[in-house]
Length: 122
Length: 107
Image (cartoon, rainbow over all chains, first blue to last red; front, side, top):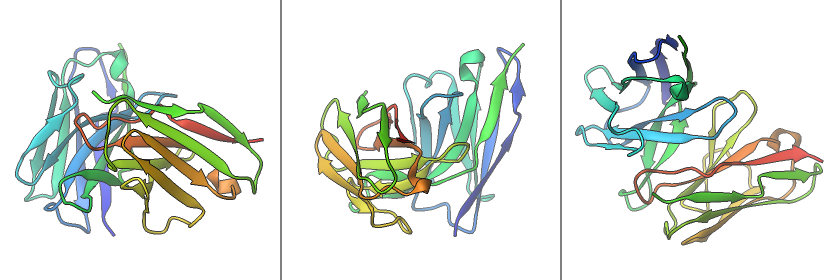
């Protein structure tokens, strides 16, 4: 059963860059999209963006100017980079696998990482 | 951006009773709708994809229905472990947006 393990810095200062990596264990990289989602304290879920094996990315326009999602398929990993963070970026960040639906065109989240708490504070 | 609106925000239900949660999309998302459960302090868990397909290992008391803009998640007989927050998400269009969640609490 595939597992996602994520790591990265949990405490940042304003204007710094958030960097998280998610490792994929017991499962292939190909055939799925791989995404990042975040959840501010006490709030709901926000989809950040996704990447597939071919390097195709899709981002949330609300974050697009600051976000980069990249992948290293040789290591079965993908990463999130968010620049110029502020207190509003304080959240639990989840990596996730997106599984193809019946028509293999639309992808939904079926596996979640455990989450990394990222706090932005001066 | 497609806006997903869930109702009610909070649902108070007694154990053993039926719970009906609603999710409305601001435009059609076909059947590309998923439901997730998030227990306190835990990671979200997939319950339903394609509006009505239960994920592996999800009990039959969970069922989903709807298409287009109106969707429903029904929990036929609430168990203690079902008290949680439930989110819908559309994956028909980018960005893939979530509803704000419905909290199911013990009455």
